[in-house]
Image (cartoon, rainbow, N blue to C red; front, side):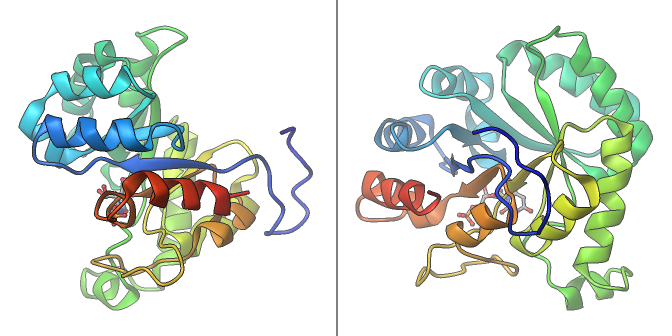
Length: 242
Ligand SMILES: O=C(O)c1cc(=O)[nH]c(=O)n1[C@@H]1O[C@H](COP(=O)(O)O)[C@@H](O)[C@H]1O
């Protein structure tokens, strides 16, 4: 779908895709979920649990089904994060996450390291404020002004330093699109179909709301993987995205 002018926060820029989070303790479980949901998901996420348990084998296996979003949330000094990006690039993930709070020098070092992998390099997504944090918890950590202000601040720094996109909660998507325009890839976890449990997510919204607000990808884990029929759950969410 071609890009449209960004005239309102509810303008759809392009089609919003479904990424299913394969948060499993063993690869066999993740593979079974991947096989079930692959017809309805454009991306499959290998996160900290699965990667810690199975390492690169998990990325290689899941990438045989769909492009992989490798969610390792790197956060360290620039040299260490650059080395991690260099080490992960041969696994050919479509996306790698790093924490925007690591600062612009860290993001810039990661981008330089990613560029070494050539045109098919992994794209870097900067995680802004985790979707499990609410305004009160954020204030307790010393961040006044609420999540939206903090997300905008971190997002601007990360994009200027070379992040290809951002991970944010549903509550910030429209504000980020208005502030940063159509270019950054916006990836949104904490999404819940109407009637689903929020689990440990603090800032949630429905798939339909996220597609309308300008998200490129929604990330959904438990509402799909813990459903009686994961394939049907993924199909319904994909349909809701329009
Ligand atoms: O980077 C992420 O994907 C991420 C960032 C964030 O702020 N919040 C968040 O929930 N996630 C991930 O998104 C997925 C959400 O899973 P469910 O809550 O089960 O839908 C998990 O794999 C989280 O690790």
